[in-house]
Length: 293
View 1 (cartoon, helix red, strand yellow):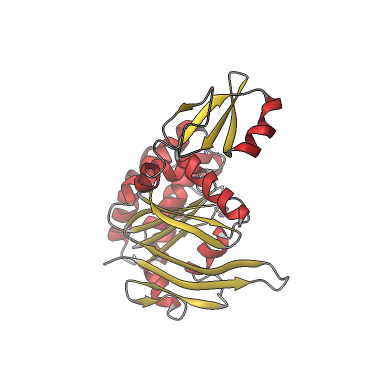
View 2 (cartoon, rainbow, N blue to C red):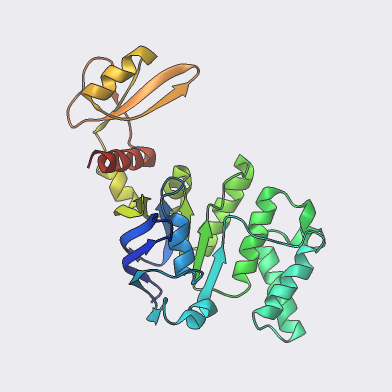
């Protein structure tokens, strides 16, 4: 069975920055969200799983393979799409993907072309196959990045901040693609965008300052907060007092008005109304708890 196990993984850089501290996770088949702010250690963890950098200590195993010591075996089943990836702008989508298929072992032309056609259709770029990559939109480039990953038939896929910079329509298309490919393999989605995780991932973890704050079933994490999230419209001058009296999770503007959300097991007082919990509430609650420790 495809599953990824991480145990007590730690990494400190030469400048003294502790990027990972005793990280332990159990990642099952399907889409798994790793959620955290910029600088939380997400990319260090993804690059370590992808065999691109060393850990100081700890263990990673995938489907019985020791990731840190059997790197060549891992690379046979791994697909990695970093936040920034290079491509050749004057190449066509078909031509460059055929080259990647050749590198992945499709030596026979007929099999290689069949694989390229299947992959381009799967990511909805078949009609643009003769178009030069330099003319692609941000969303099309991201889909082509996934095509490079899929052409090798991976069993473990890592995508790092995949929707940053995409417009809403491209983001929806990319979400649909990730949802489709994450049915039977492990797909790790590393992001600071809460909605990416809540929309896509049945399992997730929150990372902050190199530490895992918790691993959750997404729906269970939301259910545990039901009846404990309250919201009210507030003047900006009230926010400081509310922050002192309550566990204030977030403030937001809507139509020019300020609304505050708090966590409370009992009715917090006049003006507050109960509202459904969101993954942002889970996220801000865990970050707040971590800051208070």
